[in-house]
Amino acid sequence: MIYQSLILRKGEGIGWITVNRPEKLNALNVATVGELQAAFREFEADPEVKAIILTGTGEKAFMAGADIGEFSGLSAETGAHFARRGQDMTQTIENCGKPVIAAINGYALGGGTEIALACHLRLASENAKLGQPEVKLGIIPGYGGTQRLPRLVGKGKALEIGLVNKVVPLERLPAEAEAMAREIIKNAPLAISYAVRAINRGLDKSLDEGLELEAEIFGLSCGTEDAREGSQAFMEKRKPIFRGR
Image (cartoon, rainbow, N blue to C red; front, side, top):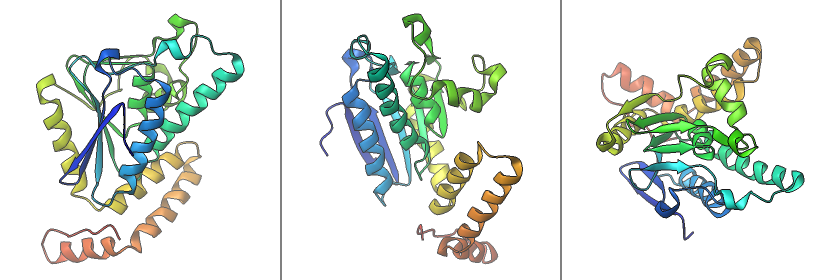
């Protein structure tokens, strides 16, 4: 696929997705939402890609919200469809079977914050600014912000802390994101995928239901070639060679 608003590259097991609309501070329009979903599906299906880093072009913005001109005239019906389209994209990110790191450079407002929330890890530069200012426009977050933020940091802290995993100097952001990704992809890719599945599917369950789900997915992981390689490598005191099988 040829992307108009994204730059994709990959190397050494890491896939980079960069939103490239610097003239709009990487704001999300409908076309970019569709491209993001396609890009994540492309990298998830690519066996060469073990981890994904999402960022924005330039130093000013990760993604500065939605393109306001596209939703200013929405009705109740078309507005709901608009939100569901964005939610579908963020669910694709959240449910990706490979670890996804948001490298947040500058502004991540509205939809930008919601996309960061859907990523599995968030690494922020010192100039990063996150927020959900939709109520200033008479609307609420529509890409999952009202649901993921309280789940991530707790209802009482949803507007305060716990949103990012680490803050680094802006010039160190790409290198730190790569370092984080490299540490993750040293592990068995199927085990990482199963762990993400267990966490995501268990969030809305009771503890007992979540533990049963975990046991089932643990069983799946035990039946993989990677599990046998991991235990054998441990006993032989060598580094495992995981093949994602």
